[in-house]
Image 1: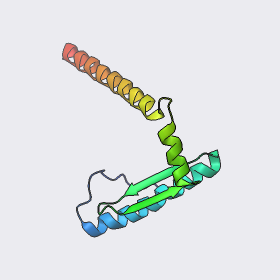
Image 2: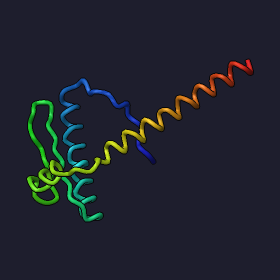
Image 3: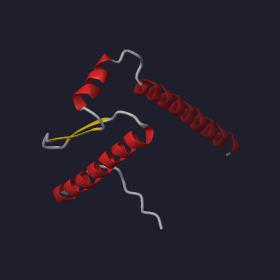
Length: 107
């Protein structure tokens, strides 16, 4: 049996927010570790909580990974992902306009 979907919004109760942060932080760090082992890649994960406390995970040396990141000159994947997201969003808008036009014609 699957878990129910939760609404993604800020958790108002401080205690629940802290519990959720702790659990999800652990899950995120576990996924980062698994990705680094399975795919033989370097990972640096930096998290600041709401009180500016630092949490970090690095599959190798954090400084080495961050230096590699700052010296990287090729376009980052995030730029590609952002472009792809914009393309998908544009297609969805066109589809919605087409659907609206179709409904206005048939009604």
